[in-house]
Amino acid sequence: MVDGIDERFAEQVRALLQPPTPLQVQEYYHNLLTERQIRGLKVKQNVETGKGVYADLDFAEEDVVLKDQMLFGIQHSYNKMDCFVCSFCFRFIGSIEIQIGKQLYFQSLGISMDIEDHNGTCSHASKASCWSNSSDDEGTVGAGDSDSSEGCAPSILGEINPLPIEVVESLMNGELRLPLSGKFALPSVVPCPGDCGEAYYCSESCAKADWESFHSLLCIGINSKSLCRQALKQFVEHANETNDIFLLAAKAIAFTILRYKKFKPAHCEEIKDSAVSTSTNLSVLLEAWKPISMGHKKGWWNCIGEPDDISKLERKELALTSLQFLREAMFDEEFGALFTLEIYGHIIGMFELNNLDLIVESPVEDYIQFITDLPDQKKKEVEKDIRPVLNALGEDYTNLCRGTAFYPLQSCMNHSCCPNTKAFKREEDRDGLATVIASRLIHKGEEITISYINEDLPYEERQELLADYNFTCKCSKCVRDQSHTDV
Ligand SMILES: [Zn+2]
Ligand SMILES: [Zn+2]
Ligand SMILES: [Zn+2]
Image 1 (tube, helix red, strand yellow):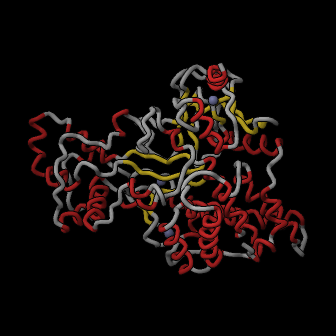
Image 2 (cartoon, rainbow, N blue to C red; image 1 turned 90 degrees about the vertical axis):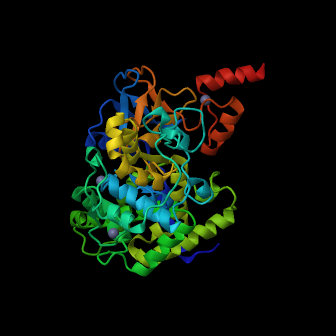
Image 3 (cartoon, protein in one colour; image 1 turned 180 degrees about the vertical axis):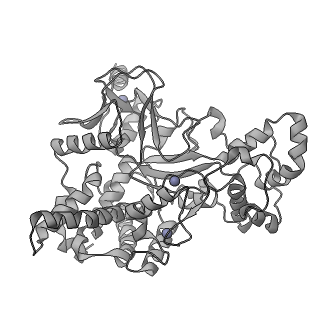
Protein backbone atom coordinates (compact mmCIF):
# COMPACT_ATOMS: atom_id res chain seq x y z
CA MET A 1 0.00 0.00 0.00
CA VAL A 2 1.75 3.13 -1.22
CA ASP A 3 0.84 6.27 0.56
CA GLY A 4 2.31 9.62 -0.51
CA ILE A 5 2.32 11.14 2.96
CA ASP A 6 4.22 8.18 4.38
CA GLU A 7 6.90 8.57 1.72
CA ARG A 8 7.26 12.29 2.22
CA PHE A 9 7.71 12.09 5.96
CA ALA A 10 9.75 8.89 6.13
CA GLU A 11 12.70 10.58 7.81
CA GLN A 12 10.61 12.25 10.53
CA VAL A 13 8.81 8.96 11.13
CA ARG A 14 12.14 7.22 11.72
CA ALA A 15 13.08 9.87 14.26
CA LEU A 16 9.72 9.52 16.06
CA LEU A 17 9.97 5.75 16.25
CA GLN A 18 13.54 5.75 17.55
CA PRO A 19 13.37 4.16 21.03
CA PRO A 20 14.51 6.51 23.81
CA THR A 21 17.95 6.04 25.37
CA PRO A 22 18.23 4.74 28.96
CA LEU A 23 19.16 8.26 30.06
CA GLN A 24 16.08 9.78 28.41
CA VAL A 25 13.90 7.12 30.02
CA GLN A 26 15.36 7.76 33.44
CA GLU A 27 14.92 11.50 33.10
CA TYR A 28 11.37 11.34 31.80
CA TYR A 29 10.10 9.06 34.56
CA HIS A 30 12.03 10.88 37.25
CA ASN A 31 10.26 14.09 36.21
CA LEU A 32 6.90 12.37 35.96
CA LEU A 33 7.18 10.86 39.44
CA THR A 34 8.30 14.20 40.89
CA GLU A 35 5.56 16.16 39.12
CA ARG A 36 2.88 13.79 40.35
CA GLN A 37 4.41 13.59 43.82
CA ILE A 38 4.54 9.81 43.71
CA ARG A 39 6.78 8.43 46.41
CA GLY A 40 8.36 5.05 46.78
CA LEU A 41 8.86 4.11 43.13
CA LYS A 42 11.66 4.28 40.56
CA VAL A 43 11.69 3.48 36.86
CA LYS A 44 14.89 1.96 35.54
CA GLN A 45 15.88 0.80 32.09
CA ASN A 46 17.74 -2.44 31.97
CA VAL A 47 19.53 -3.67 28.83
CA GLU A 48 17.97 -7.16 28.83
CA THR A 49 14.51 -6.66 30.26
CA GLY A 50 13.81 -3.10 29.17
CA LYS A 51 12.00 -0.73 31.49
CA GLY A 52 10.89 -1.78 34.92
CA VAL A 53 9.39 -0.24 38.04
CA TYR A 54 11.22 -0.73 41.35
CA ALA A 55 10.22 -0.19 44.95
CA ASP A 56 12.09 2.66 46.58
CA LEU A 57 10.69 1.87 50.00
CA ASP A 58 9.02 -1.11 51.70
CA PHE A 59 5.35 -1.81 50.98
CA ALA A 60 3.19 -3.93 53.26
CA GLU A 61 0.57 -6.30 51.86
CA GLU A 62 -2.54 -4.38 50.71
CA ASP A 63 -0.65 -1.06 50.53
CA VAL A 64 -1.44 1.13 47.55
CA VAL A 65 1.75 1.03 45.49
CA LEU A 66 0.57 3.39 42.78
CA LYS A 67 -2.41 5.39 41.63
CA ASP A 68 -1.67 6.10 38.00
CA GLN A 69 -3.26 8.92 36.03
CA MET A 70 -3.93 7.82 32.47
CA LEU A 71 -2.28 9.55 29.56
CA PHE A 72 -5.06 8.63 27.13
CA GLY A 73 -8.37 6.95 27.77
CA ILE A 74 -11.81 6.48 26.26
CA GLN A 75 -15.12 5.10 27.35
CA HIS A 76 -16.22 2.48 24.83
CA SER A 77 -18.78 3.87 22.39
CA TYR A 78 -21.44 1.27 23.21
CA ASN A 79 -21.06 1.96 26.93
CA LYS A 80 -21.90 5.66 26.57
CA MET A 81 -25.57 4.86 26.38
CA ASP A 82 -25.54 3.12 29.72
CA CYS A 83 -23.12 5.14 31.83
CA PHE A 84 -22.91 8.91 31.87
CA VAL A 85 -19.40 9.84 32.97
CA CYS A 86 -16.93 12.75 32.88
CA SER A 87 -15.09 12.64 29.54
CA PHE A 88 -11.82 13.46 31.28
CA CYS A 89 -11.69 11.66 34.64
CA PHE A 90 -14.51 9.11 34.05
CA ARG A 91 -16.39 9.79 37.29
CA PHE A 92 -20.14 9.28 37.07
CA ILE A 93 -21.91 12.63 36.79
CA GLY A 94 -25.37 14.17 37.07
CA SER A 95 -27.53 12.23 39.48
CA ILE A 96 -28.89 8.75 40.10
CA GLU A 97 -32.03 9.91 38.25
CA ILE A 98 -30.05 11.05 35.18
CA GLN A 99 -28.07 7.79 35.14
CA ILE A 100 -31.20 5.65 35.32
CA GLY A 101 -33.18 7.94 33.01
CA LYS A 102 -30.56 7.84 30.28
CA GLN A 103 -30.28 4.10 30.48
CA LEU A 104 -34.06 3.69 30.23
CA TYR A 105 -34.18 6.19 27.40
CA PHE A 106 -31.71 4.29 25.24
CA GLN A 107 -33.33 1.04 26.30
CA SER A 108 -36.66 2.40 25.02
CA LEU A 109 -35.04 3.23 21.69
CA GLY A 110 -33.90 -0.35 21.55
CA ILE A 111 -30.27 0.58 21.11
CA SER A 112 -28.84 -0.21 24.49
CA MET A 113 -26.29 -2.81 23.68
CA ASP A 114 -24.99 -5.76 25.44
CA ILE A 115 -21.26 -6.18 25.72
CA GLU A 116 -21.46 -9.70 24.28
CA ASP A 117 -22.49 -8.27 20.93
CA HIS A 118 -19.39 -6.20 20.77
CA ASN A 119 -16.51 -8.48 21.36
CA GLY A 120 -15.65 -8.44 17.70
CA THR A 121 -15.70 -4.74 17.14
CA CYS A 122 -14.89 -2.91 20.30
CA SER A 123 -11.36 -1.90 20.92
CA HIS A 124 -9.15 -4.27 22.67
CA ALA A 125 -7.07 -3.92 25.74
CA SER A 126 -4.37 -6.45 26.08
CA LYS A 127 -3.87 -6.49 29.78
CA ALA A 128 -7.57 -6.74 30.40
CA SER A 129 -7.29 -9.56 32.86
CA CYS A 130 -5.24 -7.38 35.16
CA TRP A 131 -8.36 -5.99 36.71
CA SER A 132 -9.60 -9.35 37.67
CA ASN A 133 -8.36 -10.90 40.85
CA SER A 134 -10.08 -14.16 40.22
CA SER A 135 -9.82 -16.81 37.58
CA ASP A 136 -13.26 -16.35 36.08
CA ASP A 137 -13.00 -14.84 32.67
CA GLU A 138 -16.41 -13.41 32.07
CA GLY A 139 -15.21 -10.08 30.85
CA THR A 140 -16.96 -8.64 33.85
CA VAL A 141 -13.87 -7.92 35.76
CA GLY A 142 -13.43 -5.82 38.51
CA ALA A 143 -13.64 -3.33 40.94
CA GLY A 144 -14.44 -3.36 44.58
CA ASP A 145 -16.69 -5.95 46.09
CA SER A 146 -16.33 -9.50 45.03
CA ASP A 147 -19.98 -9.88 44.12
CA SER A 148 -20.04 -6.80 41.94
CA SER A 149 -19.14 -8.80 38.87
CA GLU A 150 -22.24 -10.90 39.07
CA GLY A 151 -24.19 -8.55 36.85
CA CYS A 152 -25.79 -6.99 39.90
CA ALA A 153 -28.88 -9.03 40.51
CA PRO A 154 -30.36 -7.85 43.75
CA SER A 155 -33.54 -9.79 44.32
CA ILE A 156 -35.54 -6.58 44.36
CA LEU A 157 -35.40 -6.44 40.55
CA GLY A 158 -37.95 -8.41 38.58
CA GLU A 159 -39.40 -8.61 35.07
CA ILE A 160 -38.74 -5.73 32.68
CA ASN A 161 -41.72 -3.45 32.46
CA PRO A 162 -41.01 -0.23 30.52
CA LEU A 163 -41.90 3.19 31.93
CA PRO A 164 -43.85 5.73 29.87
CA ILE A 165 -41.46 8.00 27.96
CA GLU A 166 -42.68 11.10 29.87
CA VAL A 167 -41.54 9.50 33.10
CA VAL A 168 -38.18 8.63 31.59
CA GLU A 169 -37.79 12.22 30.42
CA SER A 170 -38.67 13.61 33.82
CA LEU A 171 -35.93 11.42 35.31
CA MET A 172 -33.43 12.81 32.81
CA ASN A 173 -34.37 16.45 33.29
CA GLY A 174 -34.45 16.28 37.06
CA GLU A 175 -38.19 16.81 37.60
CA LEU A 176 -38.71 13.39 39.07
CA ARG A 177 -36.74 12.57 42.20
CA LEU A 178 -36.27 9.05 43.43
CA PRO A 179 -36.53 8.32 47.16
CA LEU A 180 -33.30 8.70 49.15
CA SER A 181 -31.20 9.33 46.02
CA GLY A 182 -29.67 12.37 47.74
CA LYS A 183 -27.42 10.01 49.68
CA PHE A 184 -25.69 9.25 46.38
CA ALA A 185 -25.10 12.76 45.12
CA LEU A 186 -22.96 13.07 41.99
CA PRO A 187 -21.05 16.07 40.61
CA SER A 188 -23.26 18.28 38.44
CA VAL A 189 -22.81 18.16 34.69
CA VAL A 190 -20.52 20.67 32.97
CA PRO A 191 -21.02 20.74 29.17
CA CYS A 192 -18.17 20.94 26.66
CA PRO A 193 -16.98 24.52 26.04
CA GLY A 194 -17.00 23.70 22.32
CA ASP A 195 -20.72 22.99 22.54
CA CYS A 196 -20.62 19.61 20.84
CA GLY A 197 -23.22 17.91 23.00
CA GLU A 198 -20.92 14.88 23.08
CA ALA A 199 -18.48 15.59 25.88
CA TYR A 200 -19.56 16.32 29.46
CA TYR A 201 -17.53 16.84 32.61
CA CYS A 202 -17.65 16.61 36.39
CA SER A 203 -16.05 20.04 36.81
CA GLU A 204 -14.76 23.13 35.05
CA SER A 205 -11.23 21.92 35.67
CA CYS A 206 -11.83 18.62 33.87
CA ALA A 207 -13.49 20.50 30.98
CA LYS A 208 -10.51 22.82 30.73
CA ALA A 209 -7.91 20.08 31.00
CA ASP A 210 -9.60 17.99 28.31
CA TRP A 211 -10.00 21.00 26.02
CA GLU A 212 -6.35 21.96 26.36
CA SER A 213 -4.97 18.44 26.09
CA PHE A 214 -7.13 16.87 23.35
CA HIS A 215 -10.67 17.96 22.86
CA SER A 216 -10.22 21.39 21.22
CA LEU A 217 -9.00 19.54 18.11
CA LEU A 218 -11.47 16.67 18.35
CA CYS A 219 -14.64 18.53 19.28
CA ILE A 220 -17.37 18.55 16.64
CA GLY A 221 -19.07 21.59 18.21
CA ILE A 222 -19.11 25.14 16.87
CA ASN A 223 -16.00 26.22 18.80
CA SER A 224 -13.91 23.34 17.49
CA LYS A 225 -10.34 24.12 16.45
CA SER A 226 -10.29 21.41 13.80
CA LEU A 227 -10.07 22.26 10.11
CA CYS A 228 -13.19 20.38 9.07
CA ARG A 229 -15.93 19.38 11.47
CA GLN A 230 -17.65 17.31 8.81
CA ALA A 231 -14.57 15.13 8.35
CA LEU A 232 -14.25 14.83 12.10
CA LYS A 233 -17.84 13.62 12.33
CA GLN A 234 -17.14 11.03 9.66
CA PHE A 235 -14.02 9.99 11.51
CA VAL A 236 -16.00 9.45 14.73
CA GLU A 237 -18.77 7.56 12.94
CA HIS A 238 -16.28 5.29 11.23
CA ALA A 239 -14.53 4.57 14.54
CA ASN A 240 -17.84 3.85 16.26
CA GLU A 241 -18.80 1.43 13.52
CA THR A 242 -15.47 -0.36 13.27
CA ASN A 243 -13.07 0.01 16.18
CA ASP A 244 -13.16 2.73 18.80
CA ILE A 245 -9.41 2.39 19.39
CA PHE A 246 -9.14 4.93 16.54
CA LEU A 247 -10.71 7.52 18.83
CA LEU A 248 -7.93 6.89 21.31
CA ALA A 249 -5.27 7.15 18.60
CA ALA A 250 -6.77 10.49 17.53
CA LYS A 251 -6.43 11.66 21.14
CA ALA A 252 -2.74 10.80 21.09
CA ILE A 253 -2.26 12.76 17.88
CA ALA A 254 -4.25 15.78 19.10
CA PHE A 255 -2.26 15.69 22.34
CA THR A 256 1.03 15.81 20.43
CA ILE A 257 -0.13 18.64 18.15
CA LEU A 258 -1.35 20.76 21.07
CA ARG A 259 1.92 20.25 22.92
CA TYR A 260 3.82 21.10 19.76
CA LYS A 261 1.95 24.38 19.45
CA LYS A 262 2.63 25.16 23.08
CA PHE A 263 6.36 24.43 22.91
CA LYS A 264 7.08 26.01 19.55
CA PRO A 265 7.14 29.75 20.45
CA ALA A 266 9.52 29.24 23.36
CA HIS A 267 11.76 27.12 21.17
CA CYS A 268 11.96 29.72 18.40
CA GLU A 269 12.74 32.41 20.92
CA GLU A 270 15.53 30.33 22.35
CA ILE A 271 17.42 29.86 19.11
CA LYS A 272 16.71 33.45 18.00
CA ASP A 273 16.53 32.28 14.44
CA SER A 274 14.24 34.22 12.16
CA ALA A 275 14.14 31.49 9.55
CA VAL A 276 12.88 28.55 11.52
CA SER A 277 14.36 25.45 10.01
CA THR A 278 12.91 22.01 9.49
CA SER A 279 15.28 20.62 12.08
CA THR A 280 13.88 23.01 14.68
CA ASN A 281 10.39 21.81 13.88
CA LEU A 282 11.51 18.23 14.26
CA SER A 283 13.13 18.82 17.62
CA VAL A 284 9.94 20.53 18.89
CA LEU A 285 7.92 17.63 17.53
CA LEU A 286 10.13 15.10 19.30
CA GLU A 287 9.70 17.00 22.56
CA ALA A 288 5.92 17.06 22.12
CA TRP A 289 5.91 13.36 21.28
CA LYS A 290 8.09 12.34 24.24
CA PRO A 291 5.38 10.81 26.48
CA ILE A 292 4.33 8.56 23.59
CA SER A 293 7.92 7.77 22.63
CA MET A 294 8.29 6.08 26.03
CA GLY A 295 5.62 3.45 25.34
CA HIS A 296 6.67 0.10 23.90
CA LYS A 297 5.40 -0.12 20.32
CA LYS A 298 4.97 -2.18 17.25
CA GLY A 299 2.75 -1.74 14.20
CA TRP A 300 -0.87 -2.67 14.81
CA TRP A 301 -0.82 -5.04 11.84
CA ASN A 302 2.02 -6.97 13.46
CA CYS A 303 0.25 -7.38 16.79
CA ILE A 304 -1.59 -10.52 17.60
CA GLY A 305 -4.86 -9.84 19.30
CA GLU A 306 -8.37 -8.69 18.68
CA PRO A 307 -9.97 -8.41 16.33
CA ASP A 308 -8.24 -11.59 15.24
CA ASP A 309 -10.70 -12.35 12.49
CA ILE A 310 -9.24 -9.79 10.10
CA SER A 311 -6.04 -10.02 8.12
CA LYS A 312 -3.02 -7.73 8.23
CA LEU A 313 -4.05 -6.10 4.99
CA GLU A 314 -7.60 -5.54 6.20
CA ARG A 315 -6.29 -3.89 9.33
CA LYS A 316 -4.10 -1.60 7.27
CA GLU A 317 -6.99 -0.67 5.02
CA LEU A 318 -9.26 -0.02 7.98
CA ALA A 319 -6.63 2.18 9.62
CA LEU A 320 -6.00 4.08 6.40
CA THR A 321 -9.70 4.85 5.91
CA SER A 322 -9.86 6.14 9.47
CA LEU A 323 -6.66 8.13 9.07
CA GLN A 324 -7.88 9.80 5.89
CA PHE A 325 -10.82 11.33 7.75
CA LEU A 326 -8.46 12.48 10.45
CA ARG A 327 -6.08 14.04 7.94
CA GLU A 328 -8.94 15.99 6.46
CA ALA A 329 -9.89 17.22 9.90
CA MET A 330 -6.46 18.33 11.11
CA PHE A 331 -3.53 17.70 8.77
CA ASP A 332 -0.70 20.22 8.88
CA GLU A 333 2.52 19.98 6.86
CA GLU A 334 4.52 21.13 9.88
CA PHE A 335 3.86 17.93 11.80
CA GLY A 336 2.83 15.79 8.85
CA ALA A 337 4.65 12.75 10.23
CA LEU A 338 1.88 12.35 12.82
CA PHE A 339 -0.52 11.62 9.97
CA THR A 340 1.45 8.79 8.39
CA LEU A 341 0.00 5.32 8.44
CA GLU A 342 3.22 4.12 10.03
CA ILE A 343 2.79 6.37 13.08
CA TYR A 344 -0.95 5.74 13.27
CA GLY A 345 -0.35 2.00 13.28
CA HIS A 346 2.35 2.26 15.92
CA ILE A 347 0.17 4.32 18.24
CA ILE A 348 -2.59 1.71 18.01
CA GLY A 349 -0.01 -1.06 18.43
CA MET A 350 1.24 0.65 21.58
CA PHE A 351 -2.30 0.61 22.98
CA GLU A 352 -2.67 -3.01 22.01
CA LEU A 353 0.45 -3.96 23.97
CA ASN A 354 0.00 -1.73 27.00
CA ASN A 355 -3.56 -0.70 27.63
CA LEU A 356 -5.59 -1.65 30.64
CA ASP A 357 -9.35 -1.99 30.73
CA LEU A 358 -10.83 1.12 32.19
CA ILE A 359 -13.55 0.18 34.66
CA VAL A 360 -15.50 2.43 36.99
CA GLU A 361 -18.32 1.12 39.14
CA SER A 362 -21.69 2.77 38.93
CA PRO A 363 -23.39 4.53 41.85
CA VAL A 364 -26.70 3.16 40.53
CA GLU A 365 -25.70 -0.23 41.79
CA ASP A 366 -24.92 1.21 45.24
CA TYR A 367 -28.25 2.96 45.26
CA ILE A 368 -30.24 -0.15 44.39
CA GLN A 369 -28.28 -2.16 46.91
CA PHE A 370 -29.02 0.47 49.52
CA ILE A 371 -32.76 0.34 48.76
CA THR A 372 -32.65 -3.46 48.84
CA ASP A 373 -31.02 -3.42 52.25
CA LEU A 374 -33.47 -0.98 53.85
CA PRO A 375 -35.39 -2.21 56.90
CA ASP A 376 -38.80 -3.61 55.87
CA GLN A 377 -40.81 -0.70 57.22
CA LYS A 378 -38.73 1.87 55.34
CA LYS A 379 -38.69 -0.26 52.22
CA LYS A 380 -42.49 -0.35 52.20
CA GLU A 381 -42.56 3.46 52.32
CA VAL A 382 -40.43 3.87 49.21
CA GLU A 383 -41.81 0.84 47.35
CA LYS A 384 -44.54 2.74 45.48
CA ASP A 385 -42.05 5.26 44.04
CA ILE A 386 -39.18 2.97 43.28
CA ARG A 387 -40.87 -0.23 42.13
CA PRO A 388 -41.86 0.95 38.60
CA VAL A 389 -38.33 2.24 38.00
CA LEU A 390 -36.73 -1.00 39.13
CA ASN A 391 -39.15 -3.00 37.02
CA ALA A 392 -38.24 -0.91 34.00
CA LEU A 393 -34.52 -1.39 34.59
CA GLY A 394 -34.71 -5.15 34.79
CA GLU A 395 -31.94 -7.33 36.09
CA ASP A 396 -29.31 -6.87 33.42
CA TYR A 397 -28.75 -3.16 33.46
CA THR A 398 -25.17 -2.14 32.86
CA ASN A 399 -23.44 -1.27 36.07
CA LEU A 400 -19.92 -0.48 34.94
CA CYS A 401 -18.34 2.26 32.90
CA ARG A 402 -16.06 0.45 30.47
CA GLY A 403 -13.27 1.72 28.30
CA THR A 404 -9.60 1.37 27.59
CA ALA A 405 -6.69 3.52 28.71
CA PHE A 406 -2.95 3.90 28.50
CA TYR A 407 -1.22 4.45 31.85
CA PRO A 408 2.35 5.78 31.72
CA LEU A 409 3.70 4.16 34.88
CA GLN A 410 1.63 1.02 35.11
CA SER A 411 2.62 0.23 31.51
CA CYS A 412 6.28 0.09 32.59
CA MET A 413 5.59 -2.70 35.05
CA ASN A 414 6.89 -6.04 33.93
CA HIS A 415 4.96 -9.26 34.03
CA SER A 416 5.35 -12.11 36.47
CA CYS A 417 3.12 -15.16 36.91
CA CYS A 418 3.66 -14.73 40.66
CA PRO A 419 3.39 -10.94 40.77
CA ASN A 420 3.85 -8.88 43.92
CA THR A 421 1.05 -6.45 43.00
CA LYS A 422 -2.37 -6.49 41.41
CA ALA A 423 -4.34 -3.84 39.54
CA PHE A 424 -7.40 -3.69 41.69
CA LYS A 425 -10.05 -1.09 42.25
CA ARG A 426 -11.21 -0.66 45.80
CA GLU A 427 -14.67 0.46 46.87
CA GLU A 428 -13.56 4.11 46.98
CA ASP A 429 -11.78 4.15 43.61
CA ARG A 430 -14.49 5.69 41.48
CA ASP A 431 -12.55 7.34 38.68
CA GLY A 432 -10.23 6.50 35.80
CA LEU A 433 -7.06 6.13 37.85
CA ALA A 434 -5.34 2.75 37.77
CA THR A 435 -4.82 1.47 41.29
CA VAL A 436 -2.00 -0.97 41.93
CA ILE A 437 -2.03 -2.76 45.30
CA ALA A 438 0.71 -4.83 46.93
CA SER A 439 -0.36 -8.46 47.14
CA ARG A 440 2.43 -9.26 49.57
CA LEU A 441 5.29 -7.58 51.43
CA ILE A 442 7.60 -5.79 48.98
CA HIS A 443 11.10 -4.73 50.03
CA LYS A 444 12.88 -1.61 48.92
CA GLY A 445 14.84 -2.35 45.74
CA GLU A 446 12.58 -5.19 44.59
CA GLU A 447 11.05 -4.98 41.14
CA ILE A 448 7.31 -4.30 41.11
CA THR A 449 5.60 -6.92 38.95
CA ILE A 450 2.06 -7.39 37.76
CA SER A 451 0.36 -10.14 35.78
CA TYR A 452 -0.65 -9.34 32.20
CA ILE A 453 -2.62 -12.56 31.93
CA ASN A 454 -4.53 -14.95 34.15
CA GLU A 455 -1.59 -16.36 36.09
CA ASP A 456 -3.58 -19.40 37.25
CA LEU A 457 -3.60 -20.91 33.77
CA PRO A 458 -1.31 -23.88 33.07
CA TYR A 459 2.29 -23.17 32.03
CA GLU A 460 1.83 -23.83 28.29
CA GLU A 461 -1.20 -21.57 28.02
CA ARG A 462 0.55 -18.80 29.91
CA GLN A 463 3.55 -18.88 27.59
CA GLU A 464 1.27 -18.85 24.59
CA LEU A 465 -0.56 -15.74 25.80
CA LEU A 466 2.69 -14.03 26.74
CA ALA A 467 4.12 -14.62 23.28
CA ASP A 468 1.88 -11.72 22.19
CA TYR A 469 4.13 -9.50 24.27
CA ASN A 470 7.25 -10.87 22.65
CA PHE A 471 8.76 -12.59 25.62
CA THR A 472 9.21 -15.92 27.31
CA CYS A 473 8.41 -15.62 30.99
CA LYS A 474 11.19 -16.77 33.28
CA CYS A 475 9.57 -15.93 36.60
CA SER A 476 10.11 -18.36 39.48
CA LYS A 477 6.74 -20.01 38.83
CA CYS A 478 7.57 -20.59 35.17
CA VAL A 479 11.03 -21.94 36.00
CA ARG A 480 9.44 -24.37 38.46
CA ASP A 481 6.63 -25.36 36.08
CA GLN A 482 9.02 -25.84 33.20
CA SER A 483 11.26 -28.17 35.18
CA HIS A 484 8.12 -30.20 36.00
CA THR A 485 7.21 -30.33 32.32
CA ASP A 486 10.70 -31.43 31.37
CA VAL A 487 10.71 -34.32 33.84
ZN1 LIG B 1 -13.89 14.86 35.75
ZN1 LIG C 1 -16.84 19.19 22.48
ZN1 LIG D 1 5.94 -16.70 34.51
